Length: 331
Ligand SMILES: C[S@@+](CC[C@H](N)C(=O)[O-])C[C@H]1O[C@@H](n2cnc3c(N)ncnc32)[C@H](O)[C@@H]1O
Image 1 (cartoon, rainbow, N blue to C red):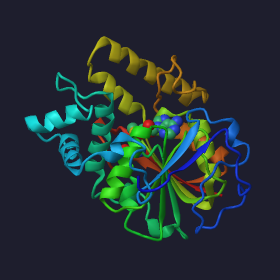
Image 2 (image 1 turned 30 degrees about the horizontal axis):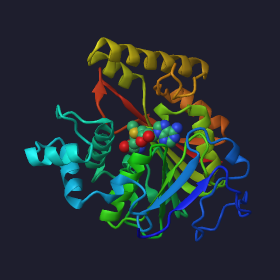
Image 3 (image 1 turned 180 degrees about the vertical axis):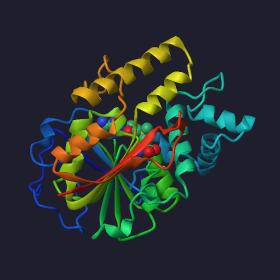
Image 4 (image 1 turned 180 degrees about the horizontal axis):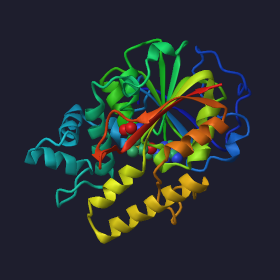
């Protein structure tokens, strides 16, 4: 064991320092704001992993050897892997006897693939110059996965990087990579629907391909709450063309039915603003986002839309970009 992690449970007494005002940048306390302890729908325990302060035994991923990181990096980049690499993946519960990814393997492979694709891309996909955000001291990525987007901002020591995700395995993978790359990122396990931060804490909030898995109005309200006035929200999401694209690549009747359900919820949400809570049996987890609905949600949250354009990256279907970017400034 190297260090002691910061663990807050919903049962523990909340520290008195939970001020409504923006905490000073020097403070490293990211704690639930008043009243929040009562509604943490996803996680009862908030665990903070820090690249420098991660605890060895807290999660098996944190104990992975360097050689395994190398193997998963090649696996995620779709390179052919040797029999001994396959054995290693099986030993760490990432691959089953039929050489198919286990549930943990799927997650790891996805995040490593994203890390691979995003490496070398400009921050915010080049849609907004970071220099325009002054001051830029704290950045939050909501639905950060293994921190693949955050790491693109990692070269400036004065900028504090915080990632939130509800998936502990992904966060642990991010902490493992961050430690390897000597990057300082604070990973917090929490739900986007109840961010454990005081209002106006961040100068930039990013959310990349994650809002589709969330209750969009609730998650955006939380992101705007923790953003300081004048701060920037960067959101990249999957729109209807993404869902049309995935319906077209028919894989099985069951998958087709699930994707059709997601598309139907996306249509209902974009026209009515109503969306069931993701994660319920009925919903299954995602809905595409429509640019007009996102703009409406954000303007109602007192944000000014700075840009609203198809993403520069991602697949194209019938001449349409499947991903979309909206940038908003909190008034
Ligand atoms: C498709 S991945 C995107 C990961 C990363 N942002 C990227 O661009 O590569 C979506 C992520 O959102 C997370 N997520 C989904 N619902 C969430 C919620 N309610 N709160 C926090 N994270 C959530 C998932 O665990 C997953 O890591």
